[in-house]
Image (cartoon, rainbow, N blue to C red; front, side):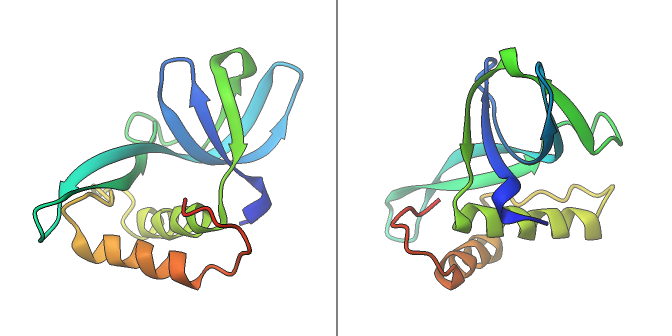
Length: 132
């Protein structure tokens, strides 16, 4: 996988996905392994509400297809994924590949997965001050 090809797409239906953009035509983006991004509130042990990122298969539960074409007219925004998000994305894709067919979603209730995200973020070598 190539970190430079990981993009965040905000769609006109308000969904945000992170994916690998493998190409583009005049009218479409060619994407693979799209994961829907959800920001979910979670109560921590100190009683404070934190927001965590949940990545889940975008259409893979409805289709076995891993490559899609998204019309450019349906994209409100396209942005490069940060190094931390890219590493987390790769982690989730690996987990889905291992458990394909099972509900392989990193959910807010999986504290180990949240720790994995934090570890991946800390290991990311970047000069950027962005967290995600």
